[in-house]
Length: 159
Image (cartoon, rainbow, N blue to C red; front, side, top):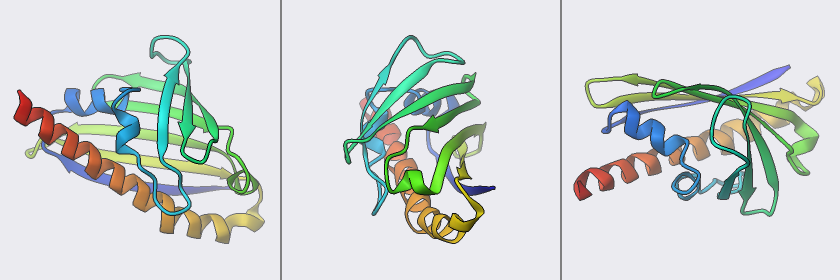
């Protein structure tokens, strides 16, 4: 069984700039500052240059380290990956998360739809996982997208 979390945002920047920020291991961590029980991302380390099949290590503020395996890399339209290695207590609820970023050119700049599908460890944890994702993960995702847009605006002012 899976639980889905979705966050959408209209960016002022064009798809290549937004996509670049999504996959930037140096700039992205400052954008994902967590929310409640969802920890901030502190650092991303690539094992090799970004491509399908590449593993990235995600270092979080709660000292957990997740692995992210890239499944789709279609610049500047789509980026997807599988996230594994959750620590307790989240590991009691989910086995993995499948993230999918879809970018579409819009009148404002770029529309981003960011989806996470979490595979549950058991149907019994559905209520707790549903609440955790709706109360904490979804707001963390929305906040991240807003932070990313602020970075894009700042970059536009500096150009």
